[in-house]
Image (cartoon, rainbow, N blue to C red):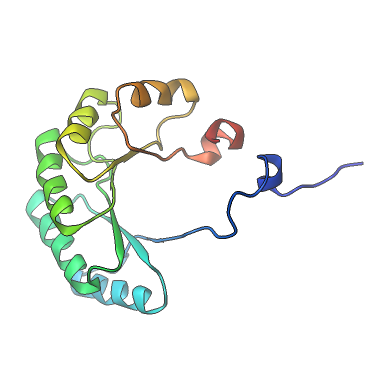
Length: 165
């Protein structure tokens, strides 16, 4: 006989009764349309939005500021740079994220640049989020040991639930 249990029970039981969520990306083709979508999501009760950038430093800085202005200070904002920048460029963008109150910077530079991520973590206030390309606890360990990330984002589909926990 097979007994089916919810995953939270297999992992040791519930530790919360709610799970926060966020809008992952504003897919509209123009910045004006993205701002309108962000305001609409906020109006529907979403408290957080992650934006995807990587369209050039100047363009992305403009987007960061414009989205913040569109939703105001009460909406939590996150940023994913999709590994498209050099370290110096990521620092420039990260400083603007700091000024605008974004809550994390995901995938800022090449995913295997441990030293560069450490520099970002030391230089910026915005936490550095990494994890999609890492598959095992052994791959995550150097990132934790060197404090090169502040938010671990394992891809549970690839790591599995036990390793992700």
